[in-house]
Image 1 (cartoon, rainbow over the protein chains, first blue to last red):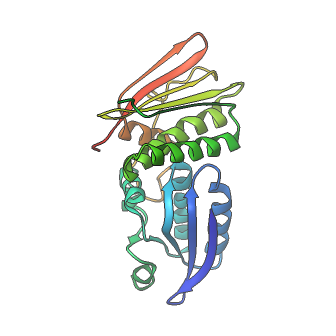
Image 2 (cartoon, helix red, strand yellow; image 1 turned 30 degrees about the horizontal axis):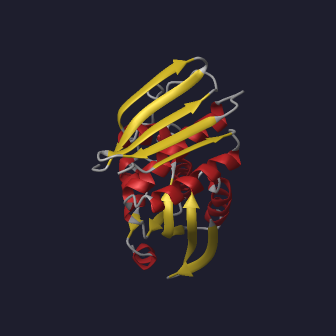
Length: 107
Length: 137
């Protein structure tokens, strides 16, 4: 899992690449929470082929911290298999998901 | 025709979960398992293995077997950790909002949602779970 920081329409974007799972959750969590300390974050998951429950926990913690801090947190570019996991977990109802990070930045 | 099958027995370390995932991904590719089904297979494998790593105090191994069948992928998972029935444990409440939504229990929720015909038994100090991941979900 690699996480690259960039921006889109003035908003911070974390570009995740690889598997978001038990092995990579801790590093991803540290990075996302640090970025959320500065403001709103869009997590671009278009290069993430796999998200397990450990990965979902990271995204839920990020959404909770964002809400507590009054920042926005959204995900973008979910692959179909990842979207399926989001839906089964009910995450589609609690974390805004956009097709692209440009949509997320303007949404 | 032979049914594609993988089996892997590992010690329950954090890095062994990643190793299992690597092997499951390689198997799925080789057996030409469709992407969404392969993802569910990896998810269930990780969930079961991570459970042993995190809660299976004193466990010496976990063993994962997957067999591709017409109906989907048949899974058998064994470990020698403490007695634990993943089918009976409390799962996450997926209808809660972001504030009240608890962080735990998601894995078991996914496991139960994605599989069919799950059954668990404890025999000779070993937990054994079998289930089917259907092709059509």
